[in-house]
Length: 221
Image (cartoon, rainbow, N blue to C red; front, side, top):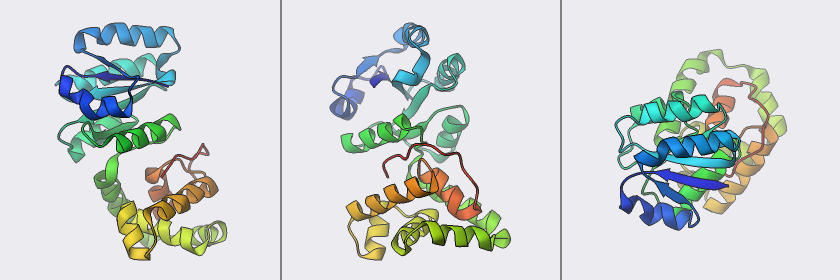
């Protein structure tokens, strides 16, 4: 998997470069050539493009790449996360929205989720989604959907999944259930596999709405 960071700020390489030592930073002037190269080599499917919001026209740049290949993998990265901006990025076709200066391990986790076809929107947006969908669907809960979850998941997996649907982070779940974060991730991985969901966003929808989401490879929690 090739990684490209579209940014004119050298400091953006500090953590991103540590996460992807073989990645390439390009400036805005190099963007057209990169898009053409990706299109010629099969689009954005073999690469993840990290687009910095330092460019005011980042939505247009995102749209250009996504329109050239609907399956293009683009991560919109920002120095100052904002929920509204994150929603716009996802609505415009980005596969993830994250902090550009996150620790390398977090950036690698974002890449892994995107590589496996999932969405990454960060804890704040997942929490908002959890609150919104729970409020909309609670009065119309389907008993069969809850029974289905109980049949598919172990009691501990169900506890973890319900906590995710409430918008809790892995650390908060670990603290609540008195288990390690590694154990939380293990339970989430098993839950993703059993329910056929790819990421926390799909899990929130599955838990709060009982929707049948598309089957796909499970991503890391």
